[in-house]
Image (cartoon, rainbow, N blue to C red; front, side, top):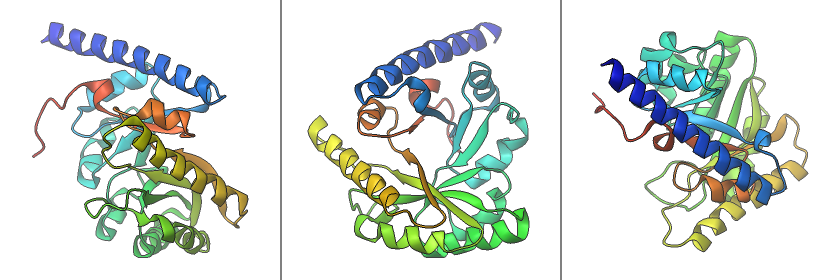
Length: 243
């Protein structure tokens, strides 16, 4: 057992070293530094012990996909060294489970969800909740997110709520056949991000553009992402099935 744990830790260290080097190279290509990019460790189905080891090795941002899993693992995380964002599809009836456990909700994709987060942030937190607006950049029926053409309207609606603070945008691009097509989606998303920032909307600070995962984070960084959400490239393939 100890040998297996050691192998797992060595794998995490090697993976993170590779990822940080890749981030530095991609950031330089976009005129930035590695420190300008936040690495999020996506922790879906990963045991807290392995997540905490990644935290000890410098990871300071976790991404949780599911409310029930977050609640189950929350007390076991080393939260003094890392903050948690919620990144998965969030049902309105699950907001109360996670509202006091995360510092930012990245997956706000509807007015109804924004309203519920606003309501509970006011009644449960007594402070605004930071959010990102999730954009369905590929307009895929199988994916969540507000339509590209409706994104500004939702940004403005959320920004008008007293217990929300819009901090940026998030997306998951479609699976693409070639690099040029993928980069086209990232570039389109970056243009929207820059456009929203230029409008100087009250209660909107376009601080974060969250895009890019294990298979495409370098391309995302080259096109303006400053949060990348990486799971399998850190922790390997999921080592147990979800219950």
